[in-house]
Image (cartoon, rainbow, N blue to C red; front, side, top):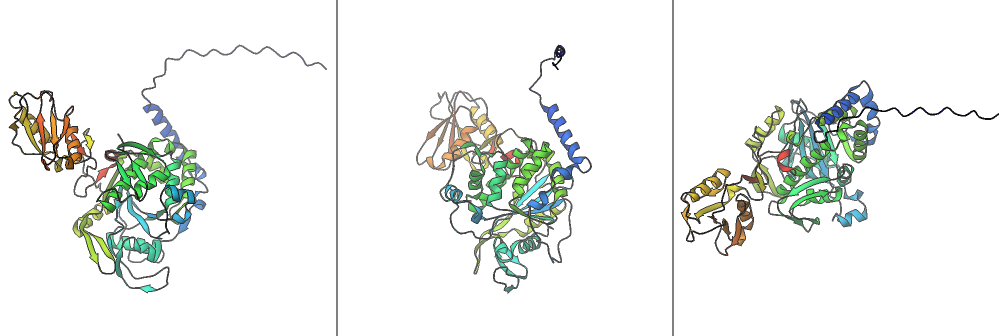
Length: 482
């Protein structure tokens, strides 16, 4: 039987013309997306359905087993974040490319307390140097089975002797901060975290080179993949700051990682959040209590985060190179300052003082470390005093006694400096837009500014690591790329 002819298709429905879309104000779209995502995760059972199975992906440990006489629980949540070696899980190609040769040490490269405030609007990160002088409580050596009495060690050795449990006990004894959760990250999970987020952007005002790790970054901004980021946070032979400098870079990296996670849309998409979390948690170790509920709470909290929501500091050091027989050189904490720091953490108060947002240009050397003599290179009366006052107001250590230059016909401002203080000279020149740098061998540490007719104003500058307050804290927005 022949098929009847089909009816003609109705004409396409005409839609009314729309006004042009304004693409320069995406805030409303972000707010809608955020609201929808929160609604999805908050709906009964949906949040659990989205992240179902994640618990089984995590390698579980019990670092709190049989622990007694623990500190009282404070406000907020404290996570002990431990970075371990784990190079035995790295491929041969990765070992060669990222300079990860040698045998694994089975110790901790990184120890941090991450405090999430009670309202989940602030994250405070305190770095504990791995070479900190520490005293372990009595324990059984996990390798030899030998029973040890309390004895002094470097902090990172607690993991080698007693694993996560002894590490938690030692940190709690030193800080009197109760650890709520334990999270252990090795090289593999670190690189995977960075790669699954699409890389992390790092900025530096000076070149960073370490022949031990292979790190080689020019001044400027760089998008690092997982392996490159690992080189960045492991490097400790860049300058004389050694481990303390490395911890600053680790803090800078964490700030950039938070900025990446909160701006990439990962936290606004429940399915994307699940996939990223699953990829990362497949190679970490955590306590049994760090489960689905905590993951959902953390995801919700971080949606409200911005770089300024995070703050970073290192436990105050009282004595560098504190020698201990049989252990070597350690870092001795400043007991009073460290005590106040951890009390602030227990009381869930911010570590960084309230500040007014600064638009100052970042420089390598802090103005407070640079001595300057100002000279007036023009016939304009009072110009030397204006330049001197402007530099002093920005933090430079001027002589407060400007003088007239021999040449009073200078058209352009000049910064004269000894080549040995070239970094200081560049920082000073940044505060004087359009100025020229003139090297003068043998001039010494005192820099000279000869003000020319082109001088207009002093630009505010600040150090690359603008620490604040008693605990020398930085917030994330101060250390990430502009």
